[in-house]
Length: 79
Image 1 (cartoon, one colour):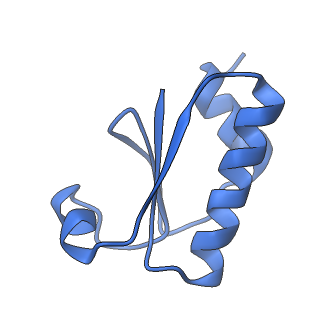
Image 2: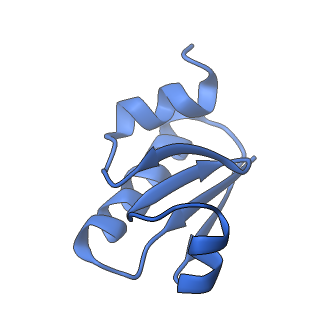
């Protein structure tokens, strides 16, 4: 599983990355977490507002910071 955290490094972007890392650890899943800072790369995904969270290329959250529990549901399919 590939989780991408899109953002330019603001406080919300950092919090989203922390939440994603914690969710992966708590869910006990294998995932590669990638931070995407490059504006052109962010725009190429179709995201116009950060922070954003993509899981396996699918936009899961844009312009907000989902909590750890919400991210866990995203990565486990709601289990």
